[in-house]
View 1 (cartoon, helix red, strand yellow):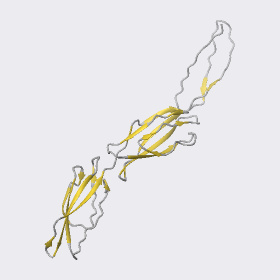
View 2 (tube, rainbow, N blue to C red):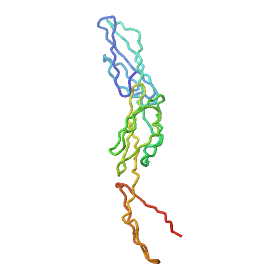
View 3 (cartoon, rainbow, N blue to C red):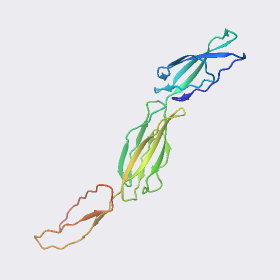
View 4 (cartoon, helix red, strand yellow):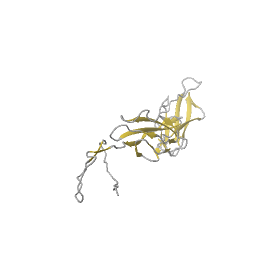
Length: 220
C-alpha cells in the first residue's frame, strides 16, 4: 500500500537478460492519474492521488520483450490509501477554572481512522496538563487556571488510516479564571434618608470582561 500523494517504488525484472518492459496502469474511480499507457520507466516511481475515502487499487499491466518476443501481460496491483480528514464535534469551548471540559467526539469520513492527540497548556494552567491520548473521544477533564487572565489548553489531533497521517486539527479549551472581588470601602455610615456613597468594585482578573451582581439584606 501507499498513501495518497505518495510514489510507487517497484522494479520490473525478468529471467531473460536484456528484456525491455512496457507497462500501463488503470486506477479506481478516485485515482489520479486515472490511467497511464505504454510507459517504459523502470523502476516505476509514480505518484498517485486518491481523492476518495476508501482504498483504491491501481492495476498495472506489464509486458516484457526480448529479441522481438513478447510475454503475456503480467499483473501488479498497488493499493492507494486515502489520507483521512479529522472532524471534531465542537471546535472549541470555554469553561471556568476548576470546572470540567466537555467530551469532544472525533470522526472521519474514512472508516477505520485512528486518532491521537497531544496537549499543550498555557502558563498559568495548573500542572499536570491533561495527558496526551488516543481514541475516538477526548474525555472530559477538570482544568484549573491559577492565573488572573484566560488561558488556553490546546489539543492537536492527528488522524491516521493504515499508516497514512492526515493534517492535524486543533481543539482549544479556554479556561477563565474565577475572579476575586475587591471592595474599596467595606463599610460606611449614613444618616437616615441620605444616599449611600458609590462603592467601587475591582477584581484581579484582566484581559476579560467582568460583570458584577449583588444582593442586599436589611436589618429589621
